[in-house]
Image (cartoon, rainbow, N blue to C red; front, side, top):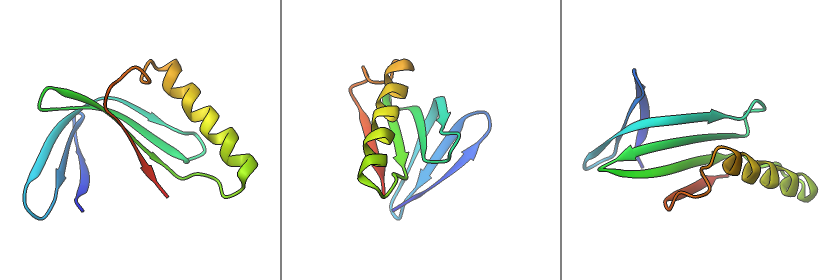
Length: 89
């Protein structure tokens, strides 16, 4: 597993045990409550939407959280991208 580090302006480099990947960040969205980070990144001429989430523990809160996340992706027109990666806890 690699680690990410920001290099200004908006360059991100992921390093792993074997090789590294350079990418350009086109858009960054941070949840005001700290529950998600969304990056629209480009690497090797492909666009990816990378989303890291820290979802609530209670079922009713999870549904509301995921609904809000989907609305955010739709409002930012990121739901139309082909390469959406969502990870987290």
